[in-house]
Image (cartoon, rainbow, N blue to C red; front, top):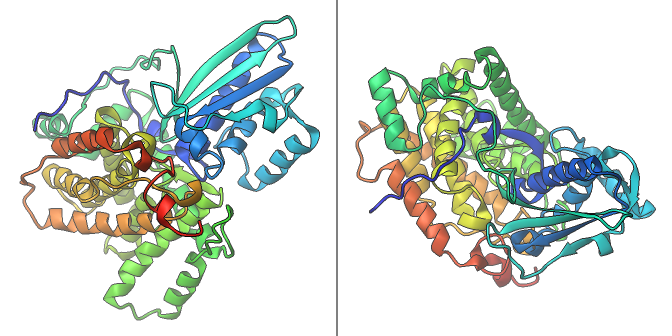
Length: 459
């Protein structure tokens, strides 16, 4: 296989990959909310508009209702950001906009806003750069208009049309890498683990202490989400009438304690992923890792490490997350983590690959074994489609996270039982994922136009 050269890409940080926000989707909820907030600031900087409109295209239009894109845009235009809004306050904020037919643009002066007129779903229309596109327009009383197109490119990241993709702090990384081969070479030449390489690179952005604080905050948010999900019950919103299962499963497993059958370990891991993705589906607080649709895999594997691995400690958890981040960077640089571009292989597949690598590192694996685990994690997710029923991040998304978490653990132990040598390289499998995503029909890339989304009767 000929592996394509990595495109020019800005230096990435763990803060780009792991962000704390709300569900149900990083690309369809978190990204549009951020875009709305950015545009609100842009619009008010040019004066006070009397009207703002938003047009949604591609996947955002086709599955936006199920992914709460409409709510995200309204909240963003009102000045809210995903990491600062209380998920419990969202229903009242949305209801107030509908009731008053106005929203506080950028959190300031209220403008007339009627959702049916000012937020338009352009079904079947795609803009050329990316399948997740939105166009905001501000109208001023003197006849001026300000228009800006945004793309939600995966994991909650947004890109403005016409903006330089490399527009970010000018940093020089001590160990730049854009491929798995480069990562292994740096490790061998410098005598560094993959986690050490990421720790050193992060110091180009901030102090080591600040990065430790951030990683610990991400860890705690992941574990808190698992705990919240295990306490909740009821029916998930959206109309599919999917009942939460995490609380019942948690009670069943607790009743079996202290005796643990071998199968119980897999059930606990499934529970951890289930609880996170049920929280995500309900619009709760989650960590994009690397997306919301795949947000349960890394927390489940982290919780597995801390609960079931003898000698697990905080340093190991940090190593797990930093190593996972390195693998996530490679997918963002060389392919995409957007299901609208890659299908679910770009979300669940990438999260599985990241988690497998992270766990291998935490268990003491060397760089070659880590790279092998990451490759195994993706190789057996290649071709995974994104076909959410009803446009909701529920079926099959929630259960796919449980399977992805178990598969990641399996991949880690398979790699640890070998010496790191293997036939298929991580770079080759990433390029295969990219090619598969390019050739995959758009019906299977978060449009709900194919697969389970059209073949499940009555949904």
